[in-house]
Each structure stands twice: as structure tokens, then as C-alpha cells.
Length: 287
Image (cartoon, rainbow, N blue to C red; front, top):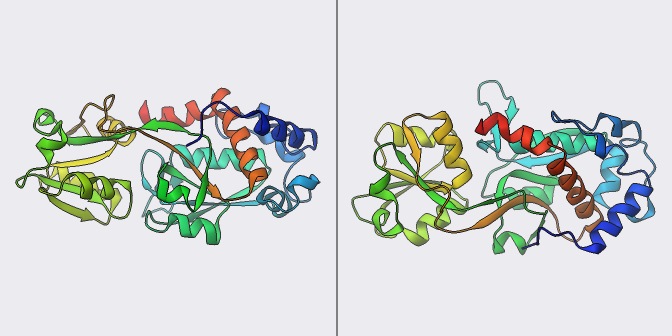
């Protein structure tokens, strides 16, 4: 896992790219996407530094298009409305801002948790949407600098927090646990709740309704998601989101071996974190 401190080599490479005109305008990104000034010097037809010629960075600049894999089913990070097809979410806004920093059109490619790594390799330049660092993923893809710390914690019907505030209390035969298919939540449930009744559920967009309706008792998911759920579902409460059962970081996925592209994205992320772009994207969902 990467440290939050940026290595001197990354800064040196980013500086070299900036001198070549590839980062022009990043410092002028606004809160709502921003980066409009960069489109004058980046995008299709822009000159490409020799170091970036064979990188995804060079390809994106030449094509004027960046393909972004995301699941569309994990609010507050990524959501695709099944009726309108419209995309929203913290990381959707961030991906659009990355595209603007490059003067590139953003194409969102819907994937699934089970296939996000394979789809990144096949179809995309980056994958976003509340993706957790895991060693399995790290064997196949590169991670950006962390976007947020997180950890697994329960979400339950309000008033029942004390019934399900430990792993031992959840791991009982009478407890009905629900978990989405194919991601780290399912791995956590399989490992920690062998005695409970665990249901693997296909539709992340309706999964919390199962708790509200009393069909299941608890879901253990990322603390960031439980905060959003508690903010938008008055019937549901997050259980100790400030003290989750474990700890991990979230970030974006990139193809392995492309250090030029990785350095550009990390540099953009650092700027977007410090200039208020990321905070503005988060405020929409957390209030």
C-alpha cells in the first residue's frame, strides 16, 4: 500500500510532464469539475512528451477520450440511475474532473465488482467507485494514492445498534446477514460470519431496502457507505462508523506498469484534494 507522502521520483516526473505542457491548467480546476483552462493545451492533437508517447497518458491526449470503468451501484461513490441512465457519485464527479484536466471526453463503462479488474485491463484507462485496496487486486493492477480511509462496520435498523455491534453478536445462527455479490463485503461476511444466515444479494441499489423491510437484520459494509445510508435512510443507522472492525484505504485502479500514467493521475488527485474539488464532490452526498 502506498504512503500518503509523495516520493521524490513522482514529483520529479510530474514536474517534467508539467514542463512539457501536459499538466497545464490543473491548478485552475474549480469545485464543480473545473480544469476548463487545461483543455486549451491538452486533449486531441496536443503535443505529447517523449516519456508519455507510449503511455495511457499519451493515448488519452491523442484520442481526446478517457474510458472509466465503474460499477454504478455503490453510492455515495458511483450510481447509475436504472430509469434514466444518468450517472452520479463522488468518484463519478472526480472522473469527470480528471477528464477535464486532460481536455478529454469521459466515457463511463459499467462493470461489476466481480469483473472490475478484468474490465479495466480490457476496456478502460482507470477504474473508480469506492474501490478498496486488496492484495488480490494489487497482484493485477496498480492503485493510485489513497482517496479515503475506511473499514467494515454494520448498518442496521435504528434502535438495534447494540444487538449487532460486534462480530461475535452478528455471527450467530439466528442473525440474517445480507451482502452484495463479488466484492470485499462478501469476502468479509464469508470469513467472519460462518454461523450466521448469509444471503448474497445481486442488486446493490435495493440491498438496504431488505433491512428496512425486515427481511434481513444487518449488512456489514464500508463505514463511508453506512454514513451515506444513515444520511438518506432515516430508518437505518450506522454502527460505530468511527471505529470499524478493520481498516483499509480506497483508491482508483490503473493498469500495471504504466508509471507515467500513474504519476499523472496521482498528481491530479493531489491537486484536486487540495483545491476543494474532492470536498465539493463529497458534500453533495454527506451534507
